[in-house]
Image (cartoon, rainbow, N blue to C red; front, side, top):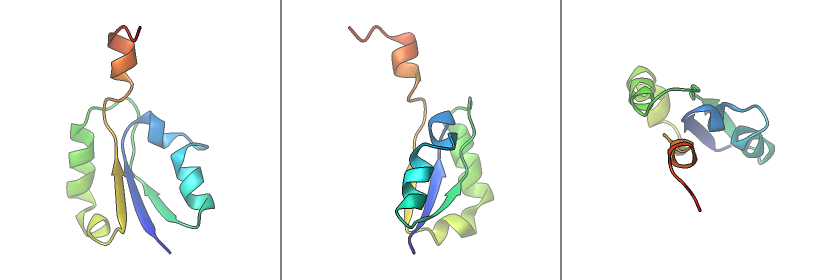
Length: 75
């Protein structure tokens, strides 16, 4: 079984989002995401969960992805 750690914002914290797809594919997922937080939250979780993260097969991280559409004109 592949051990996956998610670090990010609300886009990773959604129940039927990426974590569901990974779990449905047979992955064990540890979701350390926290909505409405900056990228520094990812660093905090890495330090706090260092031993778990070192054993992960895959780490997926995302930060400030919603800000592009929120603060910029995409047209």
